[in-house]
Length: 162
Image 1 (tube, rainbow, N blue to C red):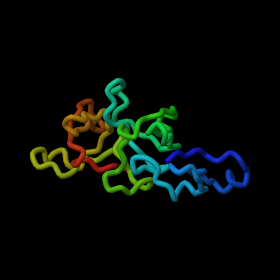
Image 2 (image 1 turned 90 degrees about the horizontal axis):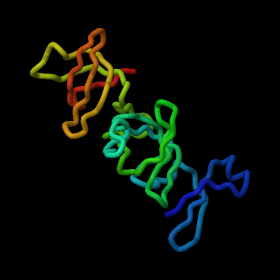
Image 3 (image 1 turned 180 degrees about the horizontal axis):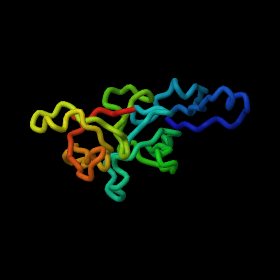
Image 4 (image 1 turned 180 degrees about the vertical axis):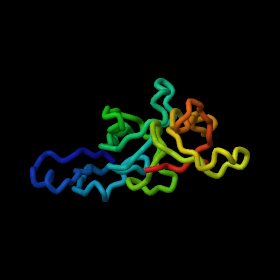
């Protein structure tokens, strides 16, 4: 399946249709929301970068899917800091519940509340800012509000705050 934004007629652009070329060479025009392109992802969904080896500091950063590059298995991503990247589908994570664009993903810089801890009850209810994600342990480094200390907390024990 190959996709390219249809630029052949202005009417198609106004209707926001994509020209889809099927393996047999035939084609059709379809709305973006009707297409699931690569990796089960859709335009407009919030994602988090994951698994980058060459640029590990980008892991945990958030962004929004702009456009698929289906032939390459990659997506153009508008990052939260305003930059744009092209990333392989394997390096993009979306909300675990699959709720897509309405989901709130944990990303670097996000504000969270700690919840559900059993060993450190004193930290439950405390708010902080996400600093970094350790993908091997699935733990976030959280800088607690009003403090200089950081805590390592499992993602399951963090609740995103507006």
